[in-house]
Image 1 (cartoon, protein in one colour):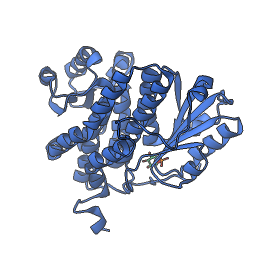
Image 2: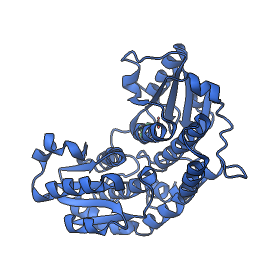
Image 3: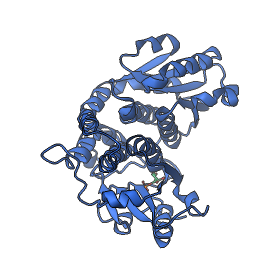
Length: 368
Ligand code: G6P
């Protein structure tokens, strides 16, 4: 087993470090000689798209959090309303599904029972199923009409990392492809965004060069009872995934909040030294985020901010800042996720937990 960890202490750390390669695979394997996205396995024509009146994104756990980012990308690029839902909730709430529904399903393993059950239910009602999965020939892949494989390579650690960032990459590509087919974006925007996506692997590499710095942050938060993650817009979705990562392997109670909701309750929980991880990767919401950081700081929070490297003024409001390279807001979740993975990893490691196999959890949940 140690050999397959490639010199890393845990699979999770190995998989975190594999992200530049994994994202490159997801992206470059699907660009043709003209740099256009070729989704050979997805046969959604312009006519098919015109018929679609409803898009759901359905998944569990980390895959669901990736879906929340996908919702933004599809709505922004392709201008189709998208409703994300947790697979175990979706099929019990009588969703509006008919032949004009597209169900986008995300599952790393392709074997999660609730996700499979959602597919079966939607199919029975006539929906078209497009799945994003990492495992070739998995049950999800077999039961879908169209499949997008992430080609991230095997993911062993229970806490999902490279599957998440490649799922987001896949969702951006699907969103761009749908948008170009529908005519809701220009070719210029399409190629410009693809070119910016090609820079993501190198930008992730730059974050990983300073991975060990995050050990200090892990030392500071390891004895905390609770930690809060804050963000706005896409950063809120990153906060949700960051909170999940830390709780599942460090056993610290975490919660993610939309920063604008702070004053509606959450701020009552902030005490002296409470760790708050503030995700500030959205340029358009940056000033609002800064004032939310000030609000928690004024109540004694220990603030760890994750920000773009050109945004140095955040240092004045934060106890620690982890920088990521500058990038367009829509692509920022791929970068801002990485420090949250490292915070979770090092905290779990320092606490002496079994990082790859957290208590009570399984890699693939094949029961309801
Ligand atoms: C389990 C795993 C998570 C994963 C979720 C969904 O809870 O521990 O890492 O996100 O299942 O799994 P899937 O294979 O469907 O993406």
